[in-house]
Length: 178
Image (cartoon, rainbow, N blue to C red):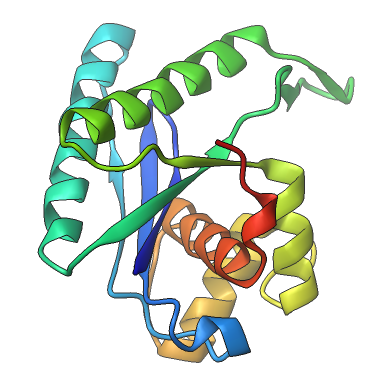
């Protein structure tokens, strides 16, 4: 069964459909589908509607490649973001927005009759991806560079993170919740 990794968001959603056949031995396969959607509206409700449509389209594309399971990045309970020169501060709005996006992934997937997606905490999948050598410092930058060198593919940051998430889940399924 293929694995669909999703990096959720309301401004952009990264996704990567990966076949687990070679990934268990860590000979990762070229992604079957990989990409990212971008939602430019400043209106939150419009972005959520656009994100829902994007998720429906992603799932529709994936269904054409056979059965798959979904893993998505579970946001931390309290998201920390950089604020000027003052380090990281709690960003409750970002946590709330990511929570909405994750809920939407679950709802759209369930409405299509698919199994419940698995949530993978950020810290868990990044740790496994580091052990696999896909990520060193920055999950977004390192994974994009790794995919570019391994498969000669140009991908957006969110798509690279979704691919690393799928690989981490394939190599260590116990990191998922749900």
